[in-house]
Image (cartoon, rainbow, N blue to C red; front, side, top):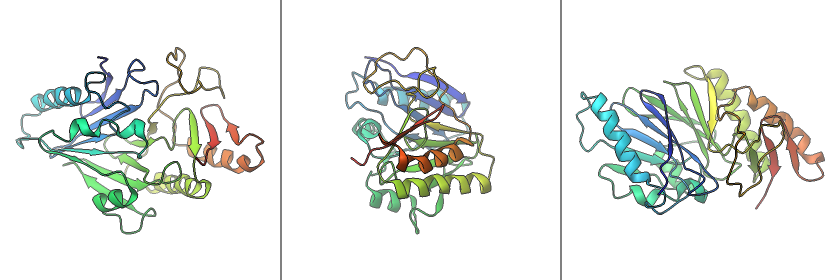
Length: 264
């Protein structure tokens, strides 16, 4: 059993990373606490609790938070399990959390995502999920994957972008909707109800050398950069997309990311 790497970003926000020892993808997950419910973004790449103890970790972190917040009386304290997108390394642990009392696991098809969050004009709309004195803005984000969304936490100023924006390979399945998503995120950043302080994606793949990424399957990444990216990275992604049609290998490298056209 390999416990996740846990970082409290503030008193109400936890960053978890699935260890490489349990799966080479080592995705990041985020647990956000509100006065009425909590929100877990993604469930990792492993279905086996004995390999990656996701359910036990969420319970431990929730109990810890509830002890610090005794005014929250709702029991069982509700948990919403949502996803930045539907690829297997982000949804494998769903089954581990479905039996949890008070848990709601959001479906992973575009129709299920649209219905749960209440999108009326998908994806060109921002909807809000209130955790209880903690509004989370949900932004449609297809392009990497059809049901992808980004989540903006006004309390921390963090825009959680899954695999759409991260320090690593930006795999673009559909270029037109992906470009529209980056443009949508730029518009949101400029008009957001709170300042967008940073972007946090779901993986770190870049090496310490600019424009160089660790190859898929790497189990040891000793020279990783920070996960957090500047909000201005979005313009750099648009610039890279402009260069993508002329790329002989379907790749454009920048200091903090590599755009890859991968229609599979």
